[in-house]
Length: 440
Image (cartoon, rainbow, N blue to C red):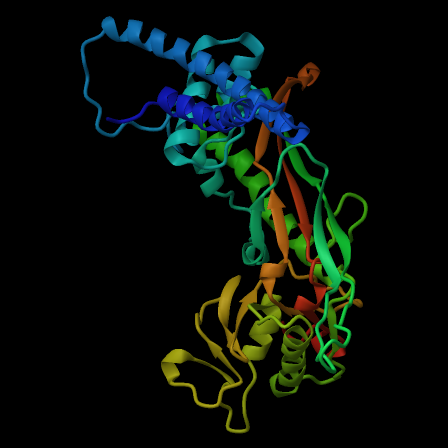
């Protein structure tokens, strides 16, 4: 039997409250009181259950109203029901938000609740369930579709270790061992055994906010024939720029003024200087090998990716040997003793090929202004770059500029990032050899 949203909510509540009940039952069976840690867990479970109880009550009320409404209509079998908000559908997510929050329109509220259920249960995409905030999640197709203004994507962000941002904190602390315990050969029976005390430290990743907004005349919302497509125009642009700024922060964030600390500004990464007034791909090959060696020799981890600006890869791909043959060749050409291999053969960001047995990616968010005009090359084990992302949140504020009949659309997301747990897992190639190449 197909489970309803209400069934799933009840199962979720049971899964949360059962461990707490087991803790209490175990304490009673052992004839002891509950410890502070156990009490904290019970209270946490109770708080979570109360939130779900409110949702269950709301869903139960909705189910009762749907059941009463169903008695008034003939039975209809629907095999493929359309989503509440579709790209060219008749309903607008933005318009419903405005109608619900300004006039308390019950039909608008109903569509928003239905959309929240679709996103949370059917598509299982980005959601926000704090209080009644689930109704304000943007339609799924807004996340998948972007506006026409070109922006760099999130190539380097997708290479990092991605984890959900824990709620209720403004920083994430990651433990780090700076000096490990050691062993040594015992010099003789009953002789002293090597003892080296472990030294630890903490790497803190502050939780920062990435946010953007757009003020729009209310006439565009009221009169626009785009319906749901108008939502795409606003949120699509904001989402696209979030991806751009995220990549910029991961690579080159300063760590101050509300920014995360990017890889290039992390203390302790391996630095390789490529000094060359007239660089060529063969000359770059040695710094690349030195950067890979720095990662493997100092962190004892394999490199998972090379990341550069697209212009650096395309410059390298233009290199020719003395017979005017390309040094980077496509796999279809049966490469032999090639400096690198072009696995894709198409322009754009993302995976491009391999060098030194390491996958090479291009990301246009790589800075091109280091030391005036340099675009560094980052090599490393990106599993050691920790990226925590919260849910995308959206707001429509009709009151803040109501005197001008203007509506403010906002999108924001909480993010934390650090590459400082094992900084030697990364190398950066800088120097005059990676200055802006002529023609690129």
